[in-house]
Length: 259
Image 1 (tube, rainbow, N blue to C red):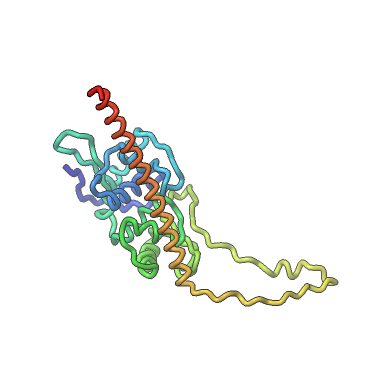
Image 2 (cartoon, rainbow, N blue to C red):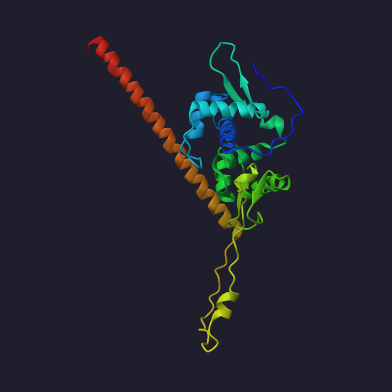
């Protein structure tokens, strides 16, 4: 039974680091492994502490996770389901009910909540695991909408190569703004040279002409391949664990049968 009820509580714009991680995990797992969603308390803890696609890596215990889930429940962002069978409580997020986000925007925010600031190429590659994002133009459109409503922040124009974005759910005392790179001031070098020394002249070399869109696309593809490679590693490790468990069962059965 789902205990969510519509209410008039104000929209949440600030979350603690633990709340962000837990909420991001609930969103991510709901999109990537719907067959195991809603999540048990232990599954939320495992997802929060996993070493891939998380920054920073943390080690929360069950009490910490349960306390954080209770805080998110009070904010109307998470609900607990009581299975009729009497099994353990399962938890789900209510982001779709509490905010007006598209599915790509939900995936993007989940990735940012779990991992923090990223380039557009990295973000598209990783968020595409959850919801298809066909190209960077579509990603920019979704990000521009989130940016205009204050849910994310960026280090510069989203059209500029190398720009980084991050969520804007930090608390004020965290001071986690995404600042643009400082431009290099070349006037200091020119004015500080002794007047009696003539500056050495170097031939100017034309900068190579690059297609920014193609470079962005390559960065996105590389980030996606890195993400897929990590997923495959995780799956292989899970399969190894399963095989080891099966081998133990076979060995035990053989002993019981005297084989």
